[in-house]
Length: 366
Image (cartoon, rainbow, N blue to C red; front, side, top):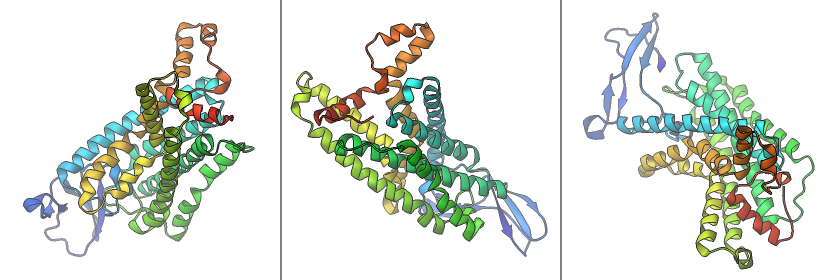
């Protein structure tokens, strides 16, 4: 990582940073890992080898200063989590592209679009967030990161709408050209705050010394505000859905043990929790004395979110397993004879349990 210093005095010029772990965590200047790369008369370029972490995306302290040990730990968690998420999301997208029955329903199409947006976000983050040595490239990374994360949250909002229609409203849920309208909304609306910030001053995307991200003022209005609003809406949806699961008519569970019912409810709640992105709320709680603990929770939950989606909605989906078995064994007819209704789309066990609620109200939503 590097940054530019405009200076007039050159004697004894060194590059350093404020190390919060020095002097019994009271802080002090340090030159560890930093060096002077070049000096052209009035500008010095400093280079440091410090790592960054996923928590910077929602860091209200602007520069994300941590004790070095925490910074390294968060960075390692971020890298491992994002690599697994990229692999999981890539495999999720491949499954949807290869197997046509997996993308017949609205829910499956929305999940596919969500996976694409998340994959773009994390690839840009992992590959470019620390490339501060290239000023223009760093601006481009910040812009793309801002856009793709907002797109991800727009699809999370649409997923929240689907959950509401499926398990709360149920009746009168048909929306003509739903996917066309959703795509225009999810991919188009995030352009507005990005264009506004660029129009005001493109240098607002040069907000980090150690990473490529926006400065604090546009961060509040163009990122934290819309993201926080989506999170708030999805939390309300999450609570409403869980209430409907708990209050499900007992007759629907007459052939199931209480333990199995509790397990299905748990997986349903966990699936919705992960899919709706409610885990991002931990980033907003990471302030003051709670900063470090919640940064760990936030980093773990969100760095692995793409991998969690892969586990919950792909590996646990019986239709996905049947499709891959058909490909591996070359027996498509055997797959069709399993009794699974491909016209209904793929369903995991927790989604099947949730659909019982819709059936109880004599309506279905696909």
